[in-house]
Image (cartoon, rainbow, N blue to C red):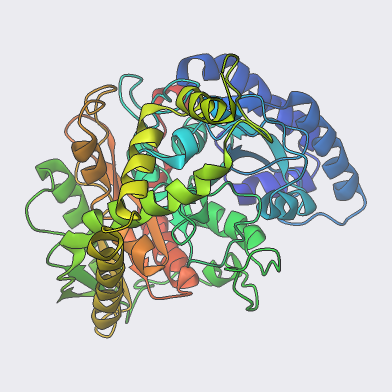
Length: 490
């Protein structure tokens, strides 16, 4: 059961081969055994999980179960959960118990999913390695000396190690796709606005988007389908009909199931910067797509090289505004000793935030300051528009865009801790997708020379989630990279 897919778990639950309580217990016991080494969870909610599982069993007995009823999952600790710690991986919120549920949490609870607890993450979702968490670094299940990626590294590691079959995440510049690649699982970031940001503690509001992790595209489709939908409480939520992403994957397999699909290969993604082992795995995956009937065309994203500098102006600017609310007054960490109100603000924030969060807030405040706003922030927004236009131009010639998710496999813990720029470059292939608001998916396509997973990124036009999931699903029918497990999950 630990390694079963969601459809397999659904059949087992419906056939009463296992109860939701028993299934939750299996994963909770596994968390108890493996989490001390992996550090994938910040909070494990055994009591809440078993109560939700009992309710799921009642729904199954009544014949009213849905696709996720009784299915265990993990929530990234950026989603507010009523009555449970919501820390954002920060000392600032280390004792914060949310009084309400995020919209995503409410939707999944209504679907009958069983929350096991809250997954570790880079502090306030700022990081690419999950080393900036106040609660300690998450370890990659494939090699405990390597990073799992970030900021949703706890969610990715939990799914890879089968501490949970599925997990929620958020993606601001690659924080679902990049850790999915490093941990050898599938992760999807949908079109901006499809998943409500209500109750999802903000880092950069125009970039943040909830996403889904699973072992396969099919598992991601089932989870994402339950997460999307209009929410009037989120001004950026899109008012459009929901889609059944899992249904779009159905249909008989055929010899060339992707006949007619045009995949664009950006010349900028296949230039210098990618390691040889990642290149080999990605090129083999592209060839597999050709075998399945897809054709490939070369496209260009000429402004892609500007994505990182544009992102690291826009995102810090937004974070400096969003995090100003954490002042030690209403909630969150408050310094024990201070002289006056200004001193309390300064000491509380100095003590409550980690180094990476402080770095980004300082950069953001600087680029928004008088005399620099036009030179930096407005210029970055102009570049953002050019990047979005590049994608639209490329998608005139293809249906999907493909390339590496990351330039290398996962690096050693601490290797880039003192070099923020090198850390930022690990997101070089993912950031542009967030700047344009497009959907992106990463799925496993092999292993590097060090035995660590390699991911392929697929990018689609707005609302092309079904097409992304279908392509990855057909690839996974023809290969077994997504079925490989690290030793701890064997």
